[in-house]
Length: 201
Image (spheres, helix red, strand yellow):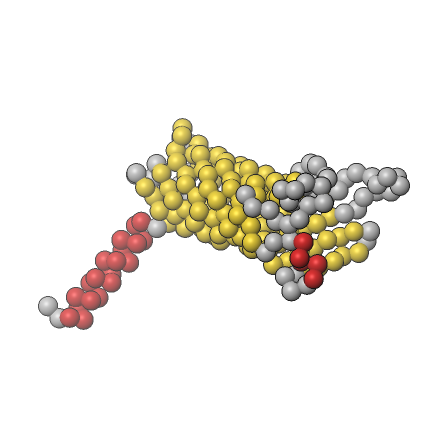
């Protein structure tokens, strides 16, 4: 058999197998976030979640291994008043880019349980206070109070409407601190709830 023809057949078979194994899609959602260790409580900070993913179906699609890339807006927002009686306008937005590794399995159709970890970087921090906006990047001196990298864990449940559309509710928490805290020794940690929809191609 011609060597070039054999090579073409091998490549076509490989692409065909990968197309059957790997599936992908996109997702969009909203965060409700707070930062533990900042002396403020409550999921008062809304934020955007957007990403793309790919996964491998295992055990006849009853078990899935998934990864992807996410853009996330977490942070905190004050809703209290200062000791002077003035409204606290502190509002911090963490712009993060992360790569998750997740396991998902069927618990009772159409519901699936999902859990995993997320490694992300935080290239931009925006703080709004008393009408002024401050932008902090890794090259700035003020970034010394924050960590560029974060490892987070998450778990949740997925409702699969059909073979394309799904809805997810997840709880996400920092395993490593995102920065220094003036109130607790364990540092600042993201604490977030995420509601999102996904579309699988």
